[in-house]
Image (cartoon, rainbow, N blue to C red; front, side, top):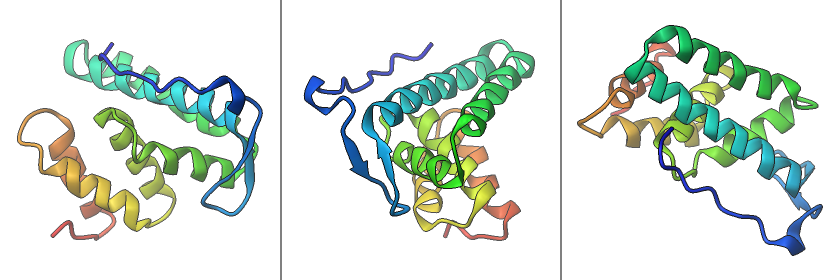
Length: 140
């Protein structure tokens, strides 16, 4: 697995209700743990794709889909994915942007893909360039 460092949530924030971009409210500790799990799966997805092939990577992609499906509603899924657009891990940012783009045309997701497409090395850049094209969105 990639050497991703996850931020540790301060103890005083456990159980705190926080505002989220969709205008709803979600428990901070739930969002944090689901966010960490998704990011971990995203890193494993990319690692498997680069080293072991698509079979293991597809299992991780299915698990990320299960994480999204386990949320209570589309607003929670949006908020989880939106929060991952700023994650330290390129894999987490990429998969979150791709998942958001499959749901809606969100400028922030396109901006993340535009940034990732500039990386001259690795698997993420070519696919980050390709995803918006499928939706007829220019990265220029």
